[in-house]
Image (cartoon, rainbow, N blue to C red; front, side, top):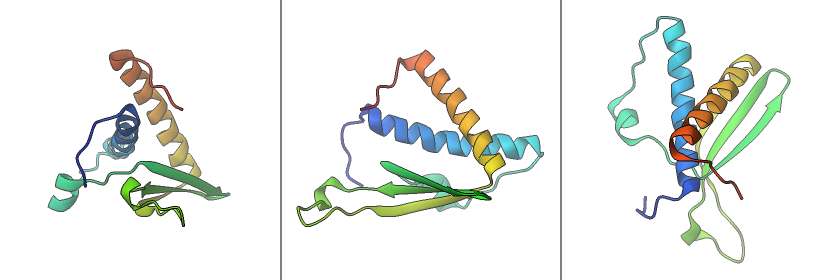
Length: 116
């Protein structure tokens, strides 16, 4: 991945990814569960600059995408699916609450996040 200026938008995406991990860890800790990840997952993670959310009655689907600005052309835009997370409605609600709480804490520490 290309290195570049860390924008607020990138920080928000990174924060959302971190919140997803934290929400999973909180859920696991409530169940007294040890989390184990392979070395490549621990070291690399995934970068996403766009997320799409869809739902049905029994599940939510979060698609995390990466749009490389250098690969966009007038003929069309391209996005790469880097991760898909499928959640029950109950877990989605817990994640929503965890994200809201984390954003509140982030803004307390670093100031308001402005979204265009």
